[in-house]
Image (cartoon, rainbow, N blue to C red; front, top):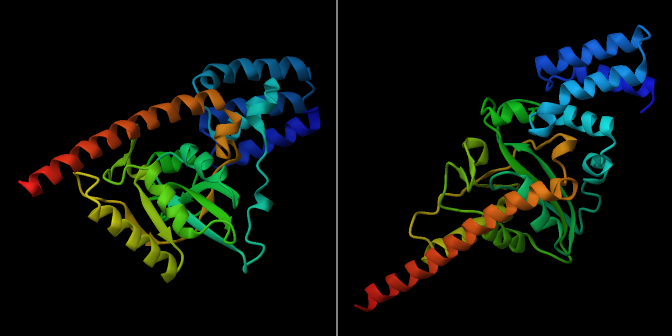
Length: 277
């Protein structure tokens, strides 16, 4: 970015309600210095050094992280999600679905890589605050959960297919989070937009209950869809921007699911043996 673009980016971050106070202070100092004629490269080097320790620990807020990646030229991690393309353009052949199942970072790739999926957006829903930020949701101040909104082509894939995939990605017996993600913002919920979706989701959940696959009760709730607030750009398509970090998280998640499936098989065999006895 040139000096004018940088000052404009700093100004927007300073006004951004999601920016933390200490971040805002560092950004304001840099903006004021640049406007007063301090050497551009020297001032940005100072800012980069100040942000670097928390950037390396992934502790910057999402929009400041995007700015930091631009600062260091890390274009791979700073790809801009085109929010304008996430829309229902053909109501005859397109539909949308919303699922919450733990960290939204791990909910995008399994859906996005399926045939018939047009767009997957990470965001927040089910809460009581407009325009929530990641920090607010993570702090459990808003009642929102992390979720994904999926736009799909009904000629290629059906809502029922998405629900079945959802069960494969989540732990439906855990009401207090998902896998390593703990807290109410990670609770599993299927958000339905109409009666058709509700019936499909409820029948699918009932089949799961009757399958005897799980020893513990199925606690995934089915709730009416509400306003879906897009997450910050940093969180969109995280698996593409930060493949190493995503793979570590996803590997841990898959190990838990594999262990859980093994437990389910053992439990199913024990239950059948008891019924025969």
